[in-house]
Length: 330
Image 1: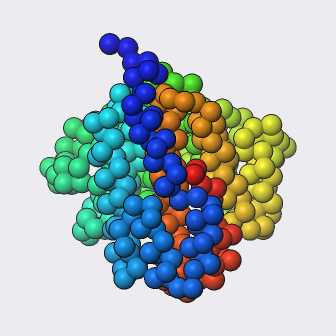
Image 2 (image 1 turned 90 degrees about the vertical axis):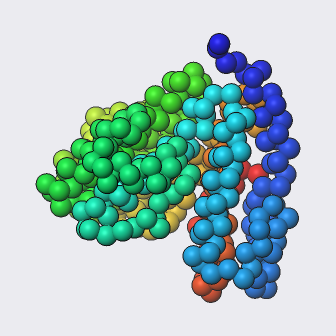
């Protein structure tokens, strides 16, 4: 049976009701201005977080990872189309594949770095690796993981292995957006791909790598093709390539970063371009847009909470943390 926007009425209403408790910029500012780390952490209990005021950095990381996994688990039984949730879970499957491939190459056990937020349980993925049955993993992940593992063995270059997995990740993301049959999801994935490619171009150019290396890093699915981006890098520059797009400002800052400017403002502009796009979901009363925006907003919130709490715990000045905070959904 075809899924329509009316099927999202219940979950959209549920998530809308939760939005007021999400971390807003105002709440984040209050945490930054709090007298101590403990005071800042306790403010989060009003948003449904457990009390993290006595936690170490490692315990904070665990608590936030558990919160993400709990959100995914809860929505799994509520979302009408699993592709909406898989758009966000997919990242953690590929993260786990990268961890296991590098661990295997270095003969280490990095199980503590695995995430429980993916579609595939970490234990299951570990077993597939141990049994050399990577192709049993779903979607493109299995074949891509096997190819990436072999590439790392041949090249001893983990970055090339990561590039290969990133390409497969975005192909799967594009397929999931199609499975949702959602223009909002398609545009979201395209913006993520454009942002990823712009970041890769800036970092690789700053490193002094050649065009061939950049081609290895670029992913498909963006509104700006890989060929067009390569032409821009070799010719008129990044700002021209992304002019008139949501990443126009970010590309200008990226050009400055390539010439020796700071990466912080550039990275923030990339993140905020995505956040600005997701803010459009608030114009939709119900539908897959509400779910996608809530999940992306939750990811941004967890990133902000981690940044604030670990920064305050380490004694990082609040102004320094503030400069790095991206726009929040709430």
